Length: 306
Image (tube, rainbow, N blue to C red; front, side, top):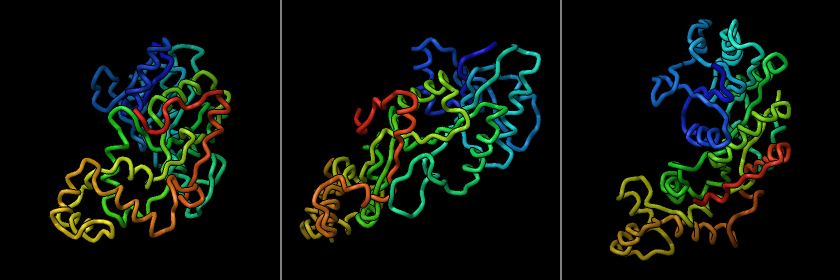
């Protein structure tokens, strides 16, 4: 059996990719550790050279690796064992491999712009991705480093209260970069269809925007996930709020929580005149234009709406 797309690890990304494959009449199969929901049971062991688990997998034109590999030799082992397990099966099927990574690899201390050619941090995961790319002459491979993922069950509106739990925490928040699951799926299928453009390269995938945590918090605040008495102290100490505890408690019951108030105070304290702040002030800014330009696409789900 041969499929167009084999997803190793049926997680959140697959909830967007599988429907899009069906819409475009591409055959797709996915794996999981348990074999749930009609997936193929499979678990990758980065320390094992046993080819047997791979023989249960179908042959595929494109193999998508959704889980991180962080052991030296792990990437080589996966592509080699998968390819060896195809021996004696369908002829003419040479799999190409896409590894999903994260843009956190570009997280140095300087406040400046970074693109896919900028140096990455030295981490086990990054090194495993470099290992995969080095194999590309024998095993066609590419890496898609994804910004923060949203869509479906993942809503930015639900994160603000967790991320900005106090004014002090919010003060130190700068930029954030995101990509919707549908645009991730579109990018994967674009690479599948024109793999020669991607082979041996690392790509940075964002929706083309640099979001400001202050901007998001002011619009989508919610009651922070911290002890009520601690939060009450924060509100009572606010320079803009009443010192009445009754007023503070009433304020906490509001739908949007205290973040908008904190943002306004921080703007006054730091001389910020309007939001969003400039990329130079926000810190790390990611330039993900290369991918969309190369594949003739544009993100269709941006601004964190919907």
